[in-house]
Length: 90
Figure 1 (cartoon, rainbow, N blue to C red):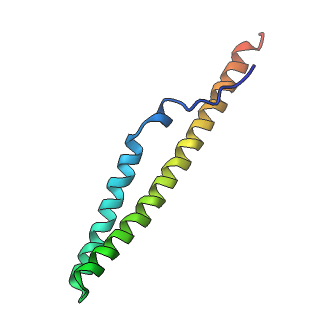
Figure 2: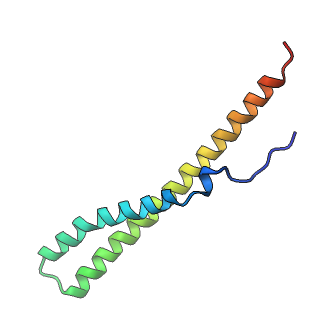
Figure 3: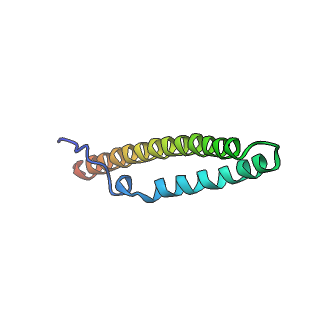
């Protein structure tokens, strides 16, 4: 029996990535508010907020990809185990 390596339906979904970007935007808002209260130039405020957003977004997207890959592998293993149990004669 061969196992397909196609991603499952949940792994093809784009909503987790949109959620990760929305979460990164929420995390960068306090950074923007903090930088706005400091005596920084507008360019430094925008640059700092952009940096916080990019670092957070990259981390969140990497985490989402890892979780999806792990979830897909667990589903495959569970499906194979169910198939093996179903084919065992009683």
